[in-house]
Image 1 (cartoon, rainbow, N blue to C red):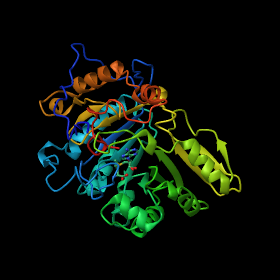
Image 2: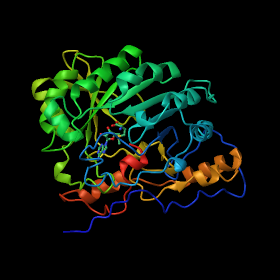
Image 3: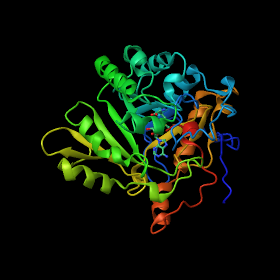
Image 4: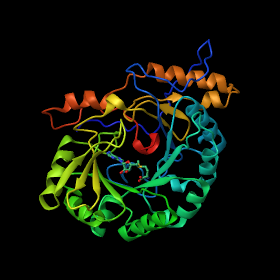
Length: 372
Ligand code: SAM
């Protein structure tokens, strides 16, 4: 048996360094491969009430698992300060995630603080949140009132038994559907529903999910199971390529491709020929989209990750808490982005061609820590 190293946090993150000459943000940052900075994902907690077998498996995330202590989490005020700096650098979209973001107490207070941030263009920030939906029925109205634009809800099956097996905490599909309805009623749309497809586990749910969400206001998106983190024992054989998902749906419900809404959209869009709406395919394994990735991630404890598959973060919290000025923080962020050259998924696509196994996974950070 090969040794598996589970990286539970990222203690090795070096402090972000401040350049000698400070620079004012122009909103036009480009990384080493010419990619702009548009999206900021903020993880507000490393905790989750689900134990999805492919993300936070029970064997690893058990009762002895050491979650981050409260003092190491960024406060809402710290998060809002960082967000303002990123907006000045050109970020137009902020997604709150985790762990399960709705487990963070009073999250609507953070939403209100982010909503109040001015943007250089005067255009409103696109403020969204990814959730497992379990607490959405209770929280949707308060989130909307605080200024959240929309939500993306993760749901891996419409069959209750399959869903309970996947979330591994016996959570019911009906409760997630209630959350989706509450979000819709509150006006948190357009609502996207994300289904991670793992072969042998829930690929039998592709068509039932498509049938369920067809002719509804909700946009179902299928996500290829990714080799993120090291706790899920990822294997290429368990990935159902998006091409296969499209073929399986189209055999019963004919589909045609639709153009992207905007450059850099992660999901390829397909519409039902009978006018029943559309579905999206997020092919992060078989058709990597690193070339136009404009995302940066802020972990729960204030480390910046320039790629979901990064093996190392950059500690922004140290600067936040040592009295550094906004100009210093902003210059450090600018320098980090300019040096960014990550394109993990593109190189992984080459590596995994013809191979049915995982390569070089030992050092990757868990998705629940970095923020999905
Ligand atoms: N708890 C929230 C939720 O369930 O949406 C937010 C965090 S969760 C880590 C974000 C998304 O990442 C979920 O849709 C989840 O299914 C997805 N995810 C987690 N591990 C994944 C993997 N190995 N491959 C693809 N998607 C994954």
